[in-house]
Image 1 (cartoon, chains in turn orange, purple):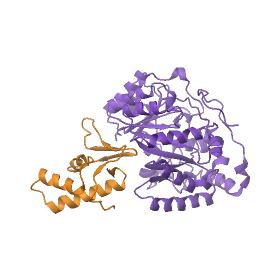
Image 2 (cartoon, rainbow over the protein chains, first blue to last red):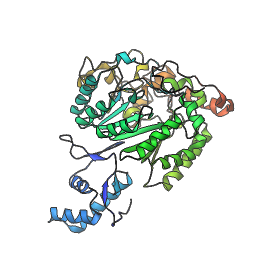
Image 3 (spheres, rainbow over the protein chains, first blue to last red):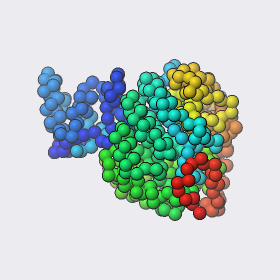
Image 4 (cartoon, chains in turn green, yellow):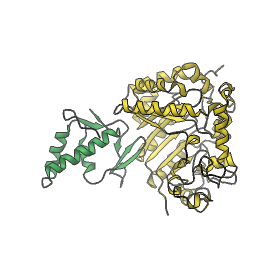
Amino acid sequence: MSEIDRDRVLRLAPGCRLSAAEGQEDILLMPEGAMRMKGPARSILELCDGTRTLDAIVEELQRRYPTADTARIESETAALLGQLLDRGALEYG
Amino acid sequence: MSYALQAVIAEVTHRCPLHCVYCSNPLEMQRRSAELSTDDWTAVFRQAAEMGALHLHLTGGEPLARADLTKLVHAGRSVYLYVNLITSGVGLDEWRLDALIAAGLDHIQLSFQDVEESAANEFAGTRSHALKLRIAEMIRQRRVAFTLNMVVHRRNLSRLEEMIAFAERTGAQRLEIAHVQYYGWALRNRDALLPSREQVRGSMEIVDAARARLQGRLRIDFVLPDYYAKYPKPCMNGWGHQQMLIDPAGRALPCHSAGVIPGLEFASVREQSLRSIWEDSPAFNLFRDESWMPEPCRTCDRRTRDFGGCRCQAFLLAGDAATTDPVCILAPSHHLIADALEHVNGNDDSANQGWVYRTDVAGDKWLPRHR
């Protein structure tokens, strides 16, 4: 799995977007399929808007979930984003 | 067991300016006068979305042959479907491409027949390659997802490395290396198209090396051609399990070639709702579960993974849609595949056979024919 480059901002790759249909808001649509973004994964993806680096995304998540364990937020976010980079669903902006 | 519709394949027209020697469209094509209208398609897309479908694949023939294609893209996107255009590119210009993207097009899959112009034009039966190069450049300049589809077979696999390098230059995010499948017109040209065992082995090595080199830059989709696999492909991920194809006249089929199977009647979206066709029509239910399966499928551990393979291929080769796909090494009819492979692997002359071109293509005469 890819290491995230911490100096660069992240965004969804062309052809990848969250569904806007009612009841399907947690589905990430991609050219060759779809993935369900469970729990906080959807928030993480929404923060990949081309203005934030990994650290900025983690910082925002800490603000939103102040009781959650910081190290865990960081490791799980990095893991999800690394996986999506490998699948071609994310890119550096 | 109930199955959720995930994707609709809309064959919006059978008209096509190309005359590929491996055309996958049915031998009997629907005429322009029989095509569904813009409103008909809009209703189909709405129903599909209501059933929970996610993806809409606009294909043909050449979908750009429809003057209302931008409206169709908009209609799909308006009901929140993911809209994919499968095209040869012929009929596209900058203005039209911008309009399609503005209408909500999510992804373009552009097909190529080769990297070498004369060969590409020969396989396409049309002088279309140079135009496709300009279209690829137009797509590269825009922020839209881009897959390059390269159709491979005996006569061009030797250029696989050049094809991959070409895909890299086009700026595509994804390269689909698609082996010809032997349905429709391709079956007529099979002896000239089937690659040799040596070619298939070499191509796998080339793809493995390219994937390692291009990781993170270009994704490569490549599957072993089913004639050389031990077990059949999970065709359509199961008959009536995920996908529905609507032909230009509105007939709903479980896959693009199901029309070859005798005795099947396909309901029309002009007369029935998508949901009733999906859930209740005999054609969608015939091979949906395991009740049709003969041995060796019936007791095979793989039946939940490959569903006995492709029903159309079973009919086309073994004459019975309800038998194991002959590709499977366990199939009683596997000798049909073994014989075909023995023939092409022992016969160097098959590369020199002439092509059988389709002459029935109801396409507008946009491009000069090859030779």
